[in-house]
Length: 195
Picture 1: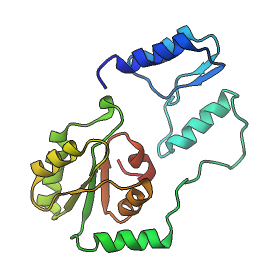
Picture 2 (picture 1 turned 135 degrees about the horizontal axis):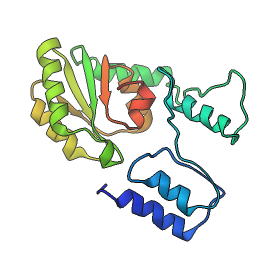
Picture 3 (picture 1 turned 135 degrees about the vertical axis):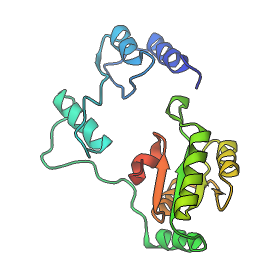
């Protein structure tokens, strides 16, 4: 997304409608300030606030919303994984990936927002190093940008391959078979606990 476009989209929404509550996890392009200045209702625009080490994002957000009095605290209850794979899904993914040498590394470059993306050149450097030093097989799952995945694979060369796009459950199942996943700030990263 070009610079300023996300802010303009938020401004456009705020011009058309008023909200009793806005919870925003974005902290760039002045979007939190825009929300605070244009919406008369309540807004929570800082969902980070120096999180403790090893606290999941979902748990962090719940804790802050509890502190703000927006949800009721439930002692000992925290977010649980929303997606549980079936034995058949795990078996199918294992079968599909059995032909690849280990270590098996997934590079996940795609993100819904350009600001969260790492350059393709950086993924190529990391992929090449992992192949050279550890003999890793590199797979790049296709997200919304197939040419990006292809460019990274071409740049890495060797055993690197594009993994065709499937549904979310298929992606979760194949990621669970990997040795390592390196991703930008995107859904698969938080779901698989990769970095």
